[in-house]
Image (cartoon, rainbow, N blue to C red):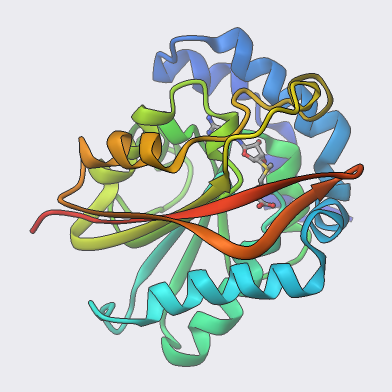
Length: 254
Ligand SMILES: C[S@@+](CC[C@H](N)C(=O)[O-])C[C@H]1O[C@@H](n2cnc3c(N)ncnc32)[C@H](O)[C@@H]1O
């Protein structure tokens, strides 16, 4: 039985928000929504588990949590956003750890695909899902605020495995910068460049990962502090193919 909020998510039509947000390639984004609606949705949690295994997942959660909890410290009631949160697989795990230290933290999960957000909503956590695009988070928030309350700015942002689906990855950094508070911080985890062209058709990928130096250059245009590092010892394994991952850490200007 769906709650009223879950029915709202189920009935969302991303083409309307995409039109309102003026994206450059709505057809490409519609294909991404179609892929995640039909191929992932309820299955996403199991898919992530197969990609990284329990140990890899724990390491990724630890990297994000450590980054959120280390200085510069968050305020007592931090607002934290997961961009491209999908089914909230990582959002829930990170939230559980962050809430141990910041009991008043509020967590939000934005994604392009309503079916993925519905999957998160069905977990019945306190995380607030909303529909939006990573390239225009501010516009997505303004759209959502017509229906319910989400903050205009966040103390911290994280994102896992979304960037390689973005049609305009540099705009993602610009977009994150616009919704981070002064002294805010963000961590983006994604795939390192690989050669598996079939990922585009099989997994709806737009980019075959990224070179860390290219990520650094994109991020540096919008943030004063940027660090991009390969995460050693963790690979994303898919049908016998294996790719490395990186973490890009950025901090907003004061
Ligand atoms: C590979 S999944 C990752 C989901 C989740 N972060 C995880 O690690 O399990 C990519 C997610 O990004 C979303 N997505 C793709 N392009 C997006 C965009 N431009 N803006 C927001 N979300 C996007 C998809 O709907 C999908 O849920």
